[in-house]
Image 1 (cartoon, rainbow over the protein chains, first blue to last red):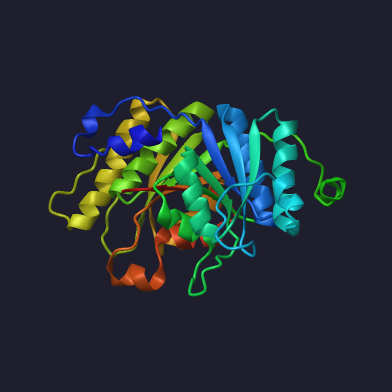
Image 2: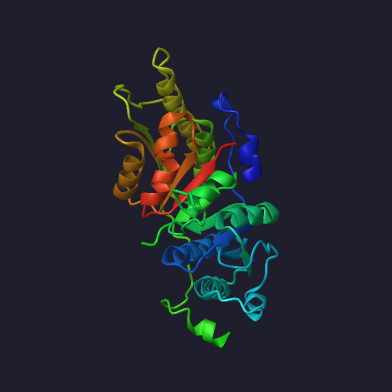
Length: 165
Length: 160
C-alpha cells in the first residue's frame, strides 16, 4: 500500500481514479509502557488482527548504555542487568495482547535516542504502519515536541498516533 | 520474569477489535492530502466504514462544495482545496464507499478535532504537509497540533 500510495502522485487527472486497496503486512509499535502507549498497543494489535499483519514492538531505553543499537529481547536486556521497568512492562503488555489475539509479535529493546531509534528501526523493518502513543516525550534536549512529532517528521511511513484517553 | 509479568497491572488483557465505523478525513488538496484521501478511502472500503471528508476554510472566501465544483477565477489556494474535495469525491464514488463532504470554517486543527468529535469518528486521517513557511516554523504543522490535542486516534500520511 505504502509503495502504491507514494507512486501514485498523479492528481491532475482525477478521472483516472482507480480502485484503491490497502495492504498492511508489518506494523511497528513503539511503546514506553505509558497509558497512551498501552492504548496504542491495543490499536496496533487490532490493526494487525484485521490485516493479518506481524507486529514488532519496540521500547527505546533512553537511559540505556550508549549507542548499542543491537535490538535485544526483553529477556536478554534484563539479563544484561539493565533496569527497564515501564518500557519492558509495555513490551510484555504487547506480548500478552498479541498472544490473546493470535497476532505474531516480537518484542525488542533498543538503547538510544527515542525518535531516532524508532526511525532507524522502521527503516530496517520497513513496516506499512507505525503506531505510537502521543504522550511519549522526546529525549532531545532542545525538542519542543513529542516523540510522535519527531517520528512523523523523520519517516514517510504512515504513523498512527493514539492518545491516553 | 514472573515479577515483570505481574507488574503489567492493567485491566485484563483481552481480545481487541479494530472497531472503526466512522473515519474523518481532512484534505486541503495538497499532495500529502491526496495520498491521505486514497488511504482513507481504501481503509473505509476494507473496514466497511463511513467517511466524512472535510476541508477547513480559514479564509474569508465564501466557497461551498456542491457538486464537482471548480472555481477557476478563485485564488490558487481555494482552487486547490476544492480540487482536493472533487478528487476525494471521484475516488469515493469509484470505490463505492459511504461518504459525505463538507467545508467547515475555522482554525484548522481545532476544527478538525471538533468536527471529528461531532461526527463521533473512530479515526482521523490527515496528510502531513510538513513545515513550510514562517507560520508553520513558529506554530508547528497542523498534523502536530491535531496529534497533540485529539483524543481520537490520528493517522498521519506524509508526502515526500
